[in-house]
Image 1 (cartoon, rainbow, N blue to C red):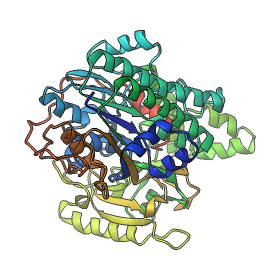
Image 2: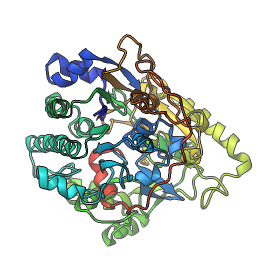
Image 3: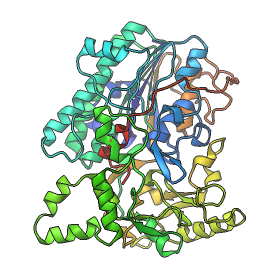
Length: 536
């Protein structure tokens, strides 16, 4: 194998350093010792479904089209899939030069590209994703036994102990390594890409509990060691989509602020806020659907809410009766969503639709189905909203936002129109941003461990000049650097540059990316994703 890329979701030097001190990651440490490493600056927004596509395409979301877990169709939404990423991947560019690839568990690759090699999609795909070549997943399972994309339980499931859940995490990590070893032996690829997702999820689900983090990283490191030994790659790269750290300050409910500022209206009754969470169990069970529709029970909850009987109000009654915990454990998430106050998108001027987009969308005439902001007033209204958000201060007196800016300052390309209108970057990524309507602007952080801007990049092996600096390495630089290391021209559409650790090839123009005919996404994706708590 000419090059191996190991993806460590949420990997960062602060975590690596602590793990190395406790001798948890000897194989990763050997790559650090033999090669060169540095922080890898992520993008805005630094979340899995947008950042991994940016890493493997080398372009910003304005050029590949994915900004979050969900894409928006008017006021409705769908979970993103590989077809939403409208730019060449590393492996499709290599395919143009008759270089083969094996890609395992990389997010947002369902359905897979048809290339010389093999692809098993990962996160945000269905539990039994279509793979390339057809039938290869059956071959993998016949060879290694069980192979699953997701844990065999839902987040919040109390029927398993924490020890059993972490054992499941480690088994999933093991499946990735075993599948990759089998496929590389079978296809003898020029390029391999193996991604580990649980290194991120363990922080979200278990609040950064260090002993659990260590177990998951130790399992990933063990698989990396076996892959290095069996595949013998000439050069190895390690990269992450973003970093991970503790959010020390209070949560900020952006829509609550927008409502009081007169930009947002709320309503009772409806489908609730956009989220992929609602379909996570369907995804794991392999059911098919593109969008979430409320069940009869969830529609009833919405109807009751419309006459004032919200699930929040009912919950307060149950709490007085001592039944709150029972109701919380057994009420479907969709009932909680449809039965409470939600944003009235058609009648609002601006709102946050999904918190992981890090921004505010406006409701514009001629662009949105029932837009209320006239086109000629777009800039003046946007400027006013930016000014209002810039003025927000936290309880400690510090600004909530490090930057509030028009989307054009962050994104460029043919799909910029899919982005939020206003980008909101939390101050030092210390404030969790919530999209849920609420009475108060600030509260206890929903997820105290969450994403940071600094990930990690490591390069080791043949042709890697470790004397060169990796200062200012960016997520967009990974793809052109790996292509150059393989002697392949990178695309002149890429926003990244070739890092000086390898000899740069000349950029060239490639044909436009065209996805092949692909299957519809499993609805379970949406429902399953609540397990990670990324959307509300």
